[in-house]
Image 1 (tube, one colour):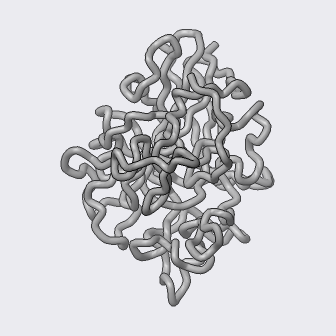
Image 2 (spheres, rainbow, N blue to C red):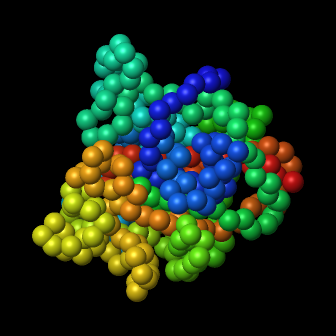
Length: 318
């Protein structure tokens, strides 16, 4: 594996709990913006290979007012190809378009629409300061993720045992089920946790029967989701009037449980953290998991963009 130092870059979305590979010594944890340690680890320009399994008028839609995105990953959860289940630095491992010339100085190549080319696969790197979280087979455990730029869609968690090849196929063999229909917004001051009813589905997902949860945070109306608003998260006229769907909770002071998050008007665009909370779920671990070391993968299939954001964490099953 390759051991390199990469420049810091904030994520558009990443797992925050349990501590990911990017959270050295588990030092950040629930701190505000902790999910930003995911950097730009994602897969870009990936589309579903067949027909959508989520209809245009489904309650699972996250961009119903944002135009036709008929082939982006959330249209058929889990089916868009993912060769790098723990993410790729920059999202475009072989350039954009594939094979484009690398920059002779940085070795990278900036990509139109975000990310860069020729970044590293997380699975080819060492993370010597990554921690391992102890879980027990057959129990209910807590997980959390956060959003920097809201691309809609939905997410799932999967697990793969070390000793096998850590691949997307391995993760697909053991998708984890959510425990119940309740999720929470955990404010990163740790002062408040707000429950809400999650929208989960196992219909039309891949692998068959795997359970996915709709991203509960609505972006602003319009195809840009609010990215071109000066604040990125207000969803107010004249830029956007309202949200793609109702937010999971209302009446909370300074909650910002809606909007795009960052704004193209800031310099750089991803330099302002608008969302100071995490989305918390509980997972039911299979009792059949044998003791040993595992890798947990968080996979967020977007609807607004042809992107899958992924993060991995070390787990020890007792």
